[in-house]
Image 1 (cartoon, rainbow, N blue to C red):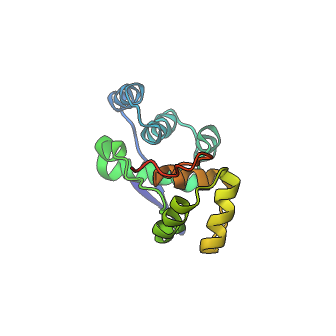
Image 2 (tube, helix red, strand yellow; image 1 turned 135 degrees about the vertical axis):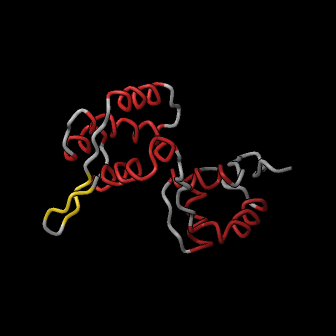
Image 3 (cartoon, rainbow, N blue to C red; image 1 turned 120 degrees about the vertical axis):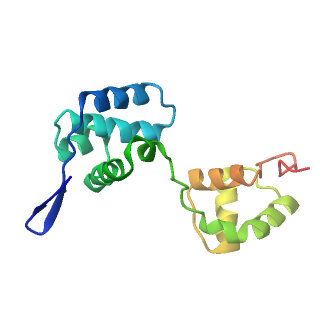
Length: 152
């Protein structure tokens, strides 16, 4: 139910005892962390906690709490259980072949060397974790022995 308050629309959901039990059941059987967070936010809201307290407990943005409530009010439990998150694509994707070719000819020995060479090749500076994640996703391994890729 939506209530108009000045310029703002307040979303108010009256949870039944059965709905709260179902949310708790789904949360206890859910293995996806993002979906568990959505369910936990709904459970906290059903127990009367304000948005600000929910965002502090779950370490999420106030707008995220509102978005979860809106999804639930419009699509129910099935909509909440959907995980539509796909992540952001790396800016390095467009240079993957160049990086792969260079590393295949001259494999970097360390992640620092790989980060430096990627920056030299692409102009894009990435930290060690971002570099490591990109190389892992592309199956490019660091090697002191001369084997640079997971692909044979």
